[in-house]
Length: 112
Image (cartoon, rainbow, N blue to C red):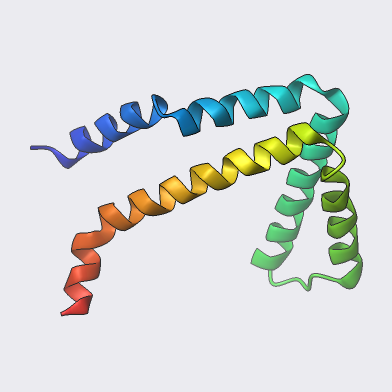
């Protein structure tokens, strides 16, 4: 048995889950609302910018934090984004559970 065959099967099975279908629909709803999508994109770009600063050892300033907080506060104005965030949380929970299952043999090595 090839472990990669199992991984590919898991990928195919994952595509068929309710969680993935709901996440896809939620993201399509965000994209359909131009203002919501532009804000979503701004937040993602700001997150990337802050991650880059961190990786380069640059300080995250109070202005950076304030700017990010202002952007994320605006997200709550859009039900489409709130729905997307809810679906992302469900997806993350499922992925965490799958990761625990997949990593169990490794975790057991260190538990003995």
